[in-house]
Image (cartoon, helix red, strand yellow):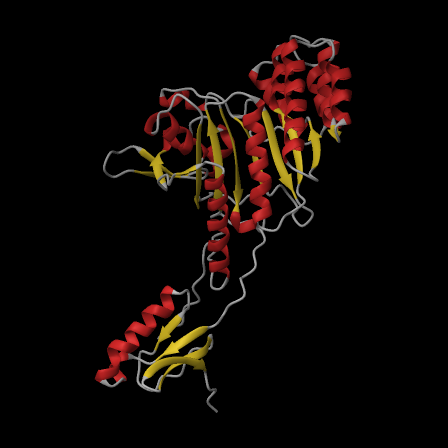
Length: 399
């Protein structure tokens, strides 16, 4: 027989025991946390029509989405690479509510390309989305829930970084950037390439005012502790009101989060524009010393539901549970039970009853499938017939 070495595609991983159980326990703890905060659980489909999946998602998600043709309708289908737009569709079309609506989810998504060299292309995303509330209190609730989610995985001291896409968007609008210039300056800012930004603005037509140029060039350096807000007010002081309002909103969010989360380190990066294609306000990310990049991200994305016939304010976050630390819980072992077939007929009913009672009490019971079969390694106890009853005793090791 020809020997095959079966390999999975690059970036496609499987989770094996006992780690798979540890991951599932983490998923359950996170969902229990979401439920305790009043978030309703939804399970969106793995596959949807492509145009529905990509609503308001920006170019990044479009490049990450696998596509196929639906043989029934002839329309393009996509395998979800994210679940935010699905939650927005559910809020707008399936669970219409006039007031705030809290939804949560936890499921596998598929990426056409990994986010990093060692990252999985099949993340297990858990997230929470809050629809119908515009106040900064909604963003503060979502950030606080993100912090508690990380604490479920033992990350007790995350650093939360806050930004606001409205700052750059307002500068681009005030400077009359066309789409090409806005995209080019955006890319240069993400690279922290100040010289490139300066050159782009110097050759722009129409030429932005000196105040706009100074403000845009200041963005890469506006990162650090709460003092960043005061520095930004100086840099943006004479600019349009919408830019100053974004700074006010960011400071209010920081204050509200600090009131909810004890001993939390807050930092600011006013050049943080992740998700610029669909975020509309504050953005936030969580970092931990043991991870090279953000372990959770979120932000405000008002109006994304307009494509589904109902524009609603929205804010939320998600986290890849596979990237979070998890340790298998200590096992209490298992009980080895003889197979019914090889037990005297008058004892079979009582044996099965004993097995059922042990399992209902939380014990793991493994039954023999062959006569004289050796107990599995995890079984440290066994069911034996003693004094006219089935009793659990320490398993005797065979030599």
